[in-house]
Amino acid sequence: MRQPLQIIRDICEKKKAQHTVPCQATMHEVMTELVEEMKEELREMCRAKIIEYHETLNSVAFNEIEDTNN
Image 1: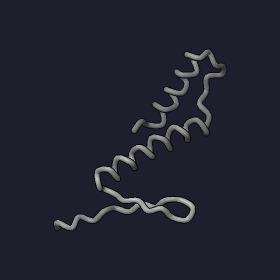
Image 2: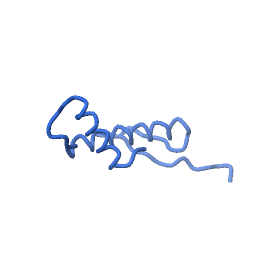
Image 3: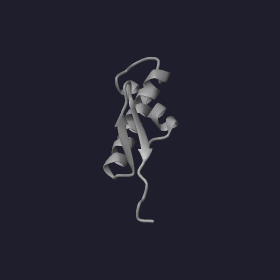
Image 4: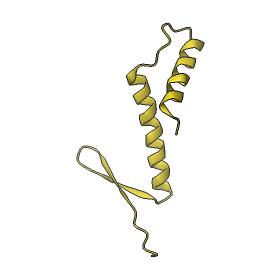
């Protein structure tokens, strides 16, 4: 997962390439990138059976899968 500073740099580079002025990363843009990366991390952890998720009424919840081998 990228660090927040790298996300800001990437957003600014993208804006420079599109000739967007001013070249600033808004809080919304940074948060959107962070959320997408976090979702992918959670998906990978679910696929690896490290965590499991449960659908709730308004969201989803996660818990660690206990190692029953010990």
